[in-house]
Image (cartoon, rainbow, N blue to C red; front, side):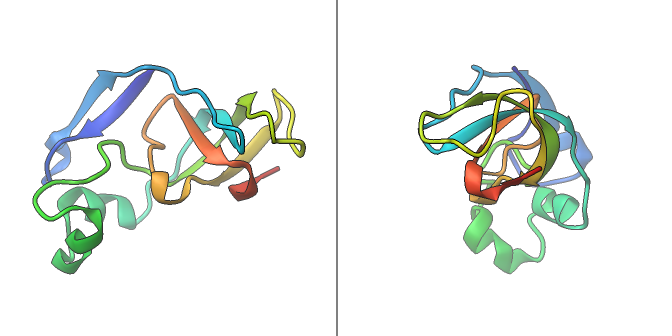
Length: 116
């Protein structure tokens, strides 16, 4: 799947296109094909690692998570075996939690953080 990765803090030029293995949802997760993501105030701040105290959580010298973005909208493509609230093909939106990873073609999320 296609993703936009970040390997270091800095200006927009630190974002790079890449390909990674497509995700498989765990038992309590759903896999969502992303249609749209918002770019909010937190996204450029995370990319730049500012304010500096946030690096205690994001990574001191470089981001801990190589794919940024926390919110999404899209369709469910796969579900874990414990998921009963959603079906494949449902349109959803939500927050990926601490996983981030929404600057991508697909994202997985705990089914409890996803809404119709």
